[in-house]
Image (cartoon, rainbow, N blue to C red; front, side, top):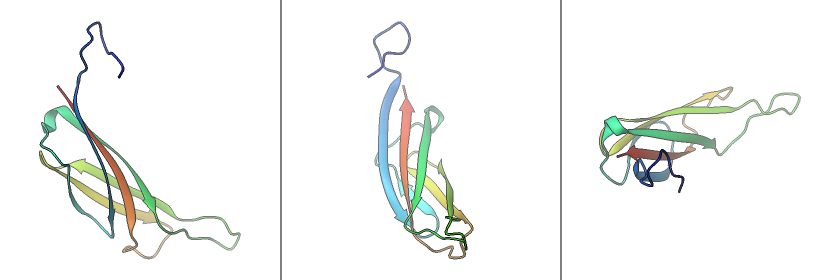
Length: 100
């Protein structure tokens, strides 16, 4: 663990990680209770499909958002650019970091 500042104490209280597969949007349980004013979330998205144009180039882009909505839950949304099936499943990988 990295030491930040001049003391040997870590400013991080807890880290929660998870992954969820979903078709559209929804709430996800964090797995603990956090102080929302001292926390942030990182996320990345992956789809299980790809779309190609006439030059065999990938045209599907997965996007989404993940935000803390309560002390125990995240709200996840998704979007696609270049794809016509809004119900295709995606996997979101998330990490919530809570500071002391």
